[in-house]
Image (cartoon, rainbow, N blue to C red; front, top):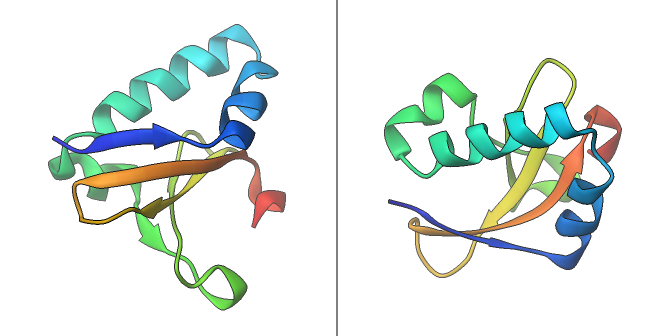
Length: 86
């Protein structure tokens, strides 16, 4: 199981999402904790200025950007939003 931490910015962005999207995000985070689901979630490494970060899809519009912290079993969710967060 992957341990997940949250940045202050992520938590702030999460709070302003509508309730249905918050529920969907929580479901996806639970799926993310199991590495076997990463292909389904489309976990991928980012490029350019964000080359040390990763992302996965919540829905067709929204993504979570995260980084590994220490090991492949610990991550910090940094931000959540549409493609404009890239």
